[in-house]
Structure formats: C-alpha cells, structure tokens
Length: 508
Image (tube, rainbow, N blue to C red; front, side):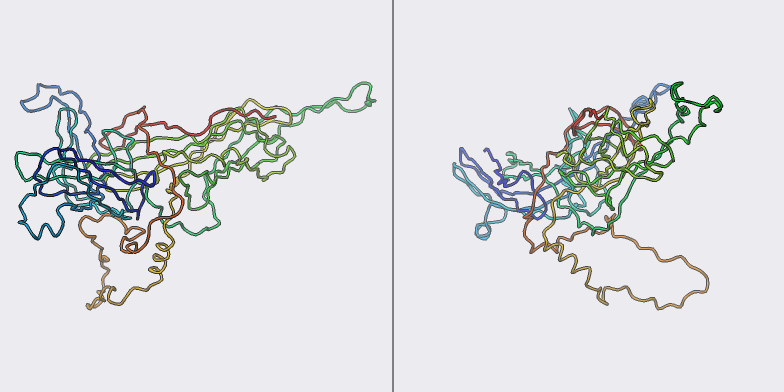
C-alpha cells in the first residue's frame, strides 16, 4: 500500500504565516481496511551529545562497570510545531459508523487534500511521543528523556549542518492507520525548508556601534638633511650639518563600525565602515596592506546536562598585497581616513548563513571579525613592519523577510493600549514593616523560561501571508570538523564554510 505526500511549493522555502498545501496520494493494489488517514505538520529540534570519557581505571572493573569509560549519551528532542488534520474519514462517515470500525477501500488511487498555516512562534509540547523520542544510532536504540526546560520564541530556521549531533527540521507526515494489530501502519514524510520572518527592526538611531584598536609603530631612523653640493655655493663658515633627532613614532587607530544596534541581513551586503585615524604628528602615512572580513557563527547545543559549542565561519572577502596609501603625507594629527567600502559593498552574505535564533536546546549567535593589515612609510617607501589588527563585533543576523505591515501595525497598537485595571496586581493590604524586607520575587509558570516573544500568534490570525521579498536560503552545509570539544562544559568544533573572494590587490 504505497502512500506519498505531494507538497505545493510556490517558494524555495516557507516562512511564518504561509499556508502549506498539498495532497496525500494513496495507491491500493488490493482492497484494504483503513481506520483513518492523519496528516501532521511537525517541526522538531533534536540534539545528541556524548559524555566525556573518564581516564582508564587503575583497578579491575567490577561486573557491570565500563572499566573507566563513560559512554553516556544524552538525547533531547523538542516538538516545536505540531498540528494535526484527519483527512479520512470525513465527519459524515464518522457519524454513520462506529468509532472503532474500519473502512474497506477498494483497489485504486485516492487523493486527500490538506492545508496548514505556519505559526510565528513555537509551541513546544511538554512531552513527546515514543516514536519521536526514539533514535537509532548504528545498531543501538536510544530513548530521549523528557525535559522541563522550554522557551517560547519565534520558530527557528531549518538547520542540518551537524549530522548526528544537532538538527532542526520541518516536515509533513501522513499516517495510514489500519485496525488489524498484525498489520503495521503506513507512513510517509515530506521535508521542507523554513526561514522565519525577522523581528520588528528598531528605528534608525543615527548611532553606531564599533570595535577599536590602535597601534604604535616602531620609530624609524632619523631624517638626515641633504647636504649641499660643492657647486651650490655653500659657505665655508657654515656649521656642519647633523642628523635631526628622532620624531614621535607613528601611531594609528582603526575603527570598524556598524549601525547601532548591530544588525546584518541574510543575502545582503554589510553596512560596514572602516576608519583609520592618525594619532601622532608624524610624516609617515598609514598603508593598507591586507583586509579580511569574516563572519563567525557559534551554535550552542545542549542535551540535558551536556553542552557543546560548535563554531564555523564564512570569509566574506580577503585581500592581500594591497599597498593602498591612506590620506596625504602632510595630514594633521587627528585626521581620519575611510577605507573604500567598494571592497565589500557588492558582496552579499552567503545563502548558507542562518538568522540568529534561540530555541529550547539550541541557539545561534554571531560575531563579525575585521582583520586590518597596516604598514607605514614615507612618500615613495614602505617600512617592513606589518601589523594585523583584529576587530570583533557581536552582531545579530536577520532573515531579511519583512513581516506584513498589518502585523507591525497590530504590535504598535498593542503598545499604545494602556493595561486595564483588572490586569494590574492587587495592592497589598498589610502595613509596611519597619524593618527592611526582601522584595517579592516573580515565579514563572512551569515550562516557561524566557521573555515573551516579539509577535503573538493571536495577532496574526487574520493577517495574510508575507508578500514581500524572499531570501535565498540553502541551509548550512555539513563542513568537515577540524576541532573537538568537551561535552561536560563548553567545547569548540571549528568549521569553515564557503565565503567571498580571496585574492590580492596591487595598488601604486
């Protein structure tokens, strides 16, 4: 009895408020008895971490012990999304038959349409089914324990870059239930990519956040004035010339600046400014020799009491041997020079960069690293000293999928509405004690572990889907791991992803 799901995919990926439509196609070669056909829209975040290996035992292990090894593996599964729709039997058929009766279906092909609407926030179930908690690792069957740590946030993006360790996936599943206990139920899956809408952007503050470093170069040799030729009529009574004293060593400051708050967008170029300031009264020029911009991702993975941090990076651009002189030799102290942003303004972020997110057992954060290679020298010369100044900025990555205008208006209206008197806490009736007391603390509800989300699904019930630009998202590739981490605390696994251009620029 083959069964499959055919999804209608008008876009390369789905986002919040989209309606997923499709059909369940059931092919029967013989007559079959079916009790129901159930379609589910599911999203899950699954993590699997292994405990550290203890040092070898110094004595013979007792029966049942592992000889100094701890092979404990923790599996944590969260159902971020779970919607159910029964497409067979219909409501009329249920009323005409007993609840536990099956339906005999003749041989042939049957199609059942379905549709789901993707919410904005996750709705993590407090307990999962046994099927969801099972994990098959080689010949071993693992069972995930239930967890009480849940957060309510915007649904995270699809993430499959850590095979066997962590993944976030979304899919539509169909189950054909058969009443006979000796016949197994038939199932089929259809995965799809998900990229959430971005949170409300703050208004433009006209301010910048920055990372700053300064460097003082070693002092150069003293400048010796050129002697006049014997044919230039130099007076014999003139005093002999001597080298001038050493000038103040050249010192420069480098800033990497982003609009505040530091937000960058998927598939868009960086709104970055790099400034170099002269901080000493010297004749030397700052010379840009190399420039590299790299986006570093940190994926924080948790499986109950085990934690791990996986890091990866995308090189946006990298140039060397540039020899670009900044400013004029006669520039005054305090003069500021801007590095030409044409080097990176036409390079968008790779489509494998996922937006910043946080869910129950996983979260993603980013840093932008700018490495500026500076040298110095007088006009027509370059001194051999080269310094690389690394500048790091914590950034948030937004998906670039703007929410519908109606949703933003609903949020603005909610902020302007004052709270009702019924919603205010009652005033205490007891007298104020004369001795200082501890302020009453707020106890959150069981299972909640975070601030309320930016959007509420109740606001978006009557709001249509996103009709603006959709970004390309190819999900994170499973790059080769070049490091390992300790799963008891925080570890580091390093991955290098494809990025922007690398090369050299030769300038006069």
